[in-house]
View 1 (spheres, rainbow, N blue to C red):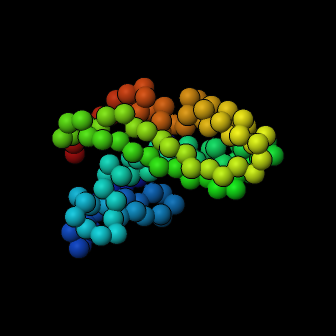
View 2: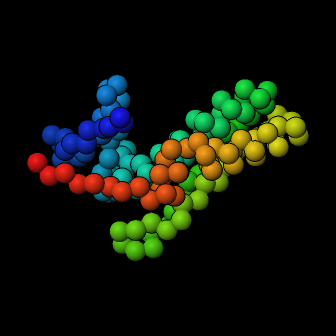
View 3: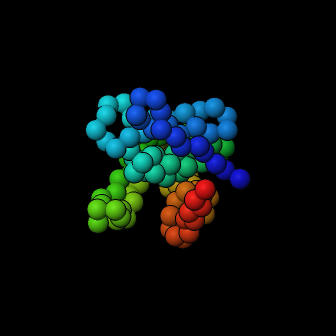
Length: 130
């Protein structure tokens, strides 16, 4: 089971911590140096895709010279995002790498990225109040 703890910090900000001790600061968007929850969602989509695409292209003998992406979404309502768009920014080592990269990136998006698939499938979010 995956879980994170999200809590208010002494300085009035917020922090998410995982079981391995990694932390990320978040806030409402007015503070420097923190992510908003929506930005973290977009980062999760991008992170899930990129950390899966990287090793799979390399295993096929085509380590990409540059591998980056932008993940974006507009709010279609004050509390709802519209479609999430992933735009890759790559530099290929060869022409042969292009087909491998495209095939891997599409397969990762369609089948292997847990975050993208969860958003696409519309997984239920349950609330438990203590």
